[in-house]
Amino acid sequence: MSENGETIRPDFAKGGGLVTTIAQDAQTGEVLMLAYMNEESYDETLATGRAVYFSRSRQKLWRKGEESGNVQLVKEVFIDCDRDAVLLKVEQIGGSACHEGYPSCFFRKVTSDGHFEIVGKRVFDPKEVYGKK
Image 1 (cartoon, rainbow, N blue to C red):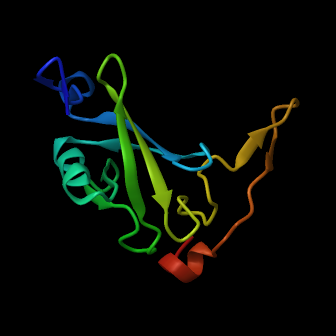
Image 2 (cartoon, rainbow, N blue to C red; image 1 turned 180 degrees about the vertical axis):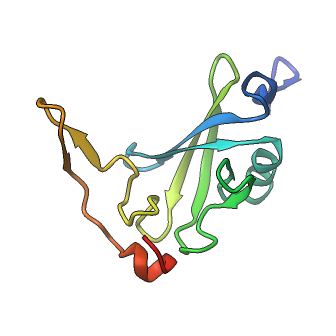
Image 3 (cartoon, one colour; image 1 turned 135 degrees about the horizontal axis):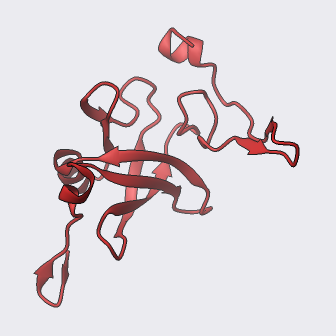
């Protein structure tokens, strides 16, 4: 990728080696999830066309779908104006981006009284897929 002949990359130094990354359904525009990328996961994503993130809790690369089979095929990659966030437009394979079994991680809607309601429909049982939860 280049702009005026220069290579465009996220500025990983701003976030201590990580950039915030949004995965969005390429067809519907629905926001599927928020994750983080480091340089290695970003480079692997570009090289393979499959979403790879960096798991902060496990401190290692997280190849989306490696356990669940719910992979994300990357259709387009965008970098924001400050170069500290990435937007991936993806084709979500398997119907779920969320480890809790919902199509989107944003399945809880906050109500006017501060509570929440589930607005998504679970497409798989996480206990069956991950053996936990």
